[in-house]
Length: 235
Image (cartoon, rainbow, N blue to C red; front, side, top):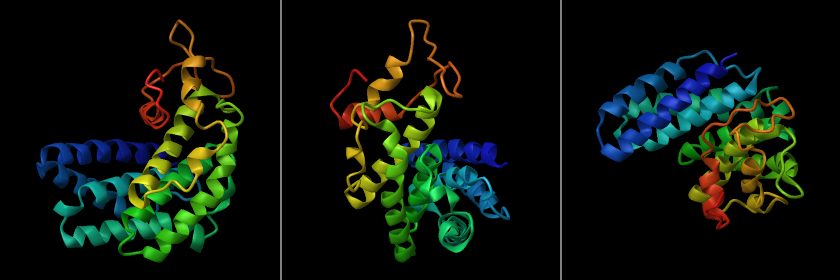
């Protein structure tokens, strides 16, 4: 499994990219470039467990996009090729596509990561980006059926945070780059699921840990998106 390293990379590139955007200091780009070139040199991102690929592709997409103007052309090309060949193109060119029609959190996470990767390299790979976006908007509704009818989530609050968090990044990315989430946010129950975490949390601060999730809660950034999107600051 490579998932731990994918998440380490995602955390680092989020922080480094944001630090660069906020300060303009290129020291953050230099470190981010080291991280991305190291990941680009991996033989693969472990497509046999595709969550590893999805989270790594999202990490690389964020770093490539948010640091783009400060990266040298050679590094851009190396990172872009890694995003394409070790991430975005896999479901179309290899056998690693079973997740495409998943009805659980795998669909949310994997379509998010590959869509972000595809849109990051859109200018250089427009056809691949178009195929990837279409693949997502046709298939991620299978996973989003879980929110029907009133916003609950069958995999428990822990996996709600995971799957829904990536689902929100997918919608926000589509909306930010293409100006539309293509109706995905209209999935039944999705406009109510922002209240789910608080309803699953007791006075102790622990969550009702049904399914295979734990009782503890951590930061859930998706709640800020739900609060703004649906006019519910109480969420």
